[in-house]
Amino acid sequence: MSSETPPIIPDEVEKLTTGLNREWYYNRRVVLYKLVAASPQIVDTWASAVLESLQAWERPMPYLALHDLSQAGVSLQYAALVNFDMLNIGVTPEGRILVERLFDEYPDWRAKVAVNFNLSLSGQTNRTLMNYLNREHPAIRYKTFYNRAKCLKWLVGEITDTNELQGLNNPQE
Image (cartoon, rainbow, N blue to C red):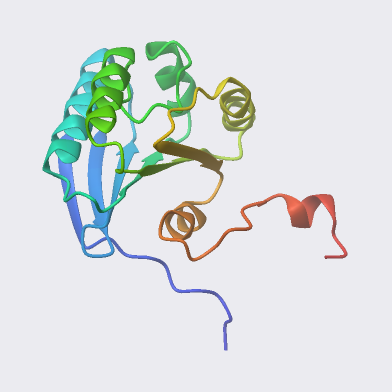
């Protein structure tokens, strides 16, 4: 008998445009944006979708989002399109400003954004760079991962220890 955890299945999947899907989890408590291709138009569509989701979000429920950049080759293309500001709830520089203003209007409202990379060299480079360059807003917390299930579990508070590489660094643990 396998001890693996069953996969977390979305409640709903929407194709926003070619190259970008929006998935809903945990009865629409968590939204996931999966980028599988990157272009200026796709990124603008994503930024608009985030703003639309946030404006419709039931406050004071925390906004819980996963930006999935784990598709091979996508994270570097996306990084170039957004001036390497990948830990950005609003996706684009303009989107960041609009979203942060929205959170400023509701000072008790909070958000958690998980960004999922792949374990390729570009994914590891982007994750390291993002952790270093992270710009904080007091209401928005960001965390980077290499595992979609771990992202979702962190968002809903099922896990707090998110050191995914601990087992690789300390094989005895």
